[in-house]
Image 1 (cartoon, rainbow, N blue to C red):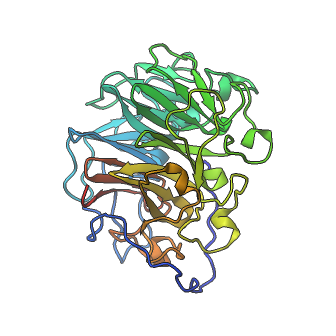
Image 2: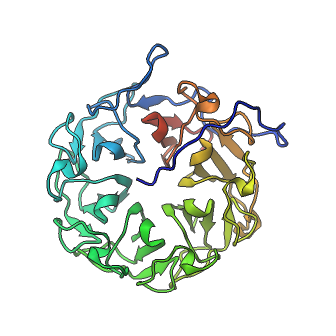
Image 3: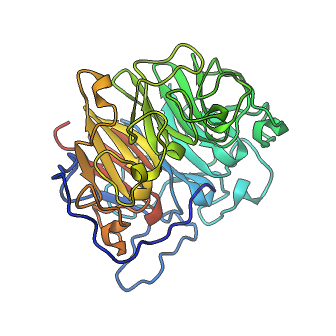
Length: 403
């Protein structure tokens, strides 16, 4: 899996804060509900064996207005489902997809690839009346035409492969094509169009309509000059059009947003691109389009820098970025002109005391209701932010204020 080795810094204090942070408009009480096993002070290790409660490195979640919640329990190679919005900590899931029961784990359930097996599921979203999941290490997207409301409901459609049995990257070839994938980590559905972060091919694929056939080719590509190229940053230096490790997708108003974790930036287009390899309008996290260093080349972060931002989501007027390696959420308020936000400082923060701090759970201690540890995903539904707090093996349901 693409999780970097984390080396704790020497015990030292960050430089004096140069900007007074404003908290994101999330409840000051922290997460209202925490899903996953909650570690106690006397425990040394949090168990990660599968159960209806425990999770292992969850990367994505999808909450619907009817209260149904689906979570990509990535490390256990399964999806967990709740039929109603959970109201208490460590509430057990009602359904499981990808394993024969809640207590089993293994890639593709230690069997052959099928319509209801998973291998490192990550991004997950509602699409039309159904559900789409980025089944990353099977190099495919699974689509259910109707929202699953039971365990091990088989998927109806597969993209990236011609059938539900095959699982080779780019279907066993060295080149990409319009109908293949390599480590697709993100999926998003917007106004009838399907967007996939085809991460290993360093590109975003777009279908203008929800696909209806297995292996249906994409209509448009971003990040590469054509459908067969797959070099990072297009084989050259970073540009407004290139990508290195795209991971998640959202829309901020009418503007497409893609997290380019490998270039330590977030890319934003004005509207929906209509041509292959369209350059983005602005980036967040870097001063220029050809800059790529973590935290803009210095050890401590700032209000305008990012380090491996994997997740992006929108709550009201806010664009919220899961700044994963800095273990924090950063938020930018909507502006009248998206162009004015190039390299803009964030307006709000959650997970750290100031913009210059980056410790996991703030002080490398136990997880708290308002702390984060390598957060990978952020999506919202109504007033509820759903945060995949992967390093803490949990999902946070956290209420937005004033939305």
